[in-house]
Amino acid sequence: MRLYVDTMDATVVEVSDDGRVRFDREEDWSTPTLQERRAIIHAATEEMAALTELVDRLADGMQT
Image (cartoon, rainbow, N blue to C red; front, side, top):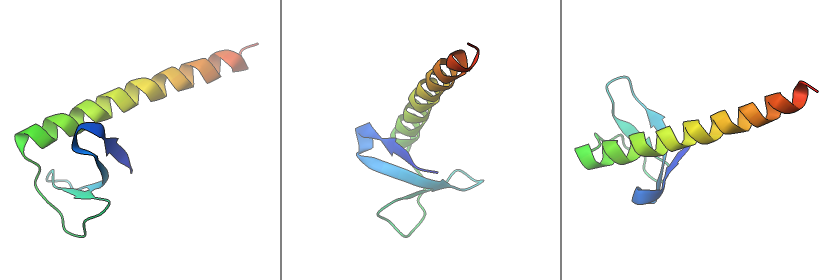
């Protein structure tokens, strides 16, 4: 997984089952602060919306 979080200027590359994250330029796992978790959730929500729109547009083109 790669999720760019604009407000943190960081890319999340892994998330553990217990909620720790690993960023692309760091080797160690870290527990995100409340503010970081909110930023990651916001970025993920925005990315899901963009991907849903992409899928919808491509799927509409297949129905012709």
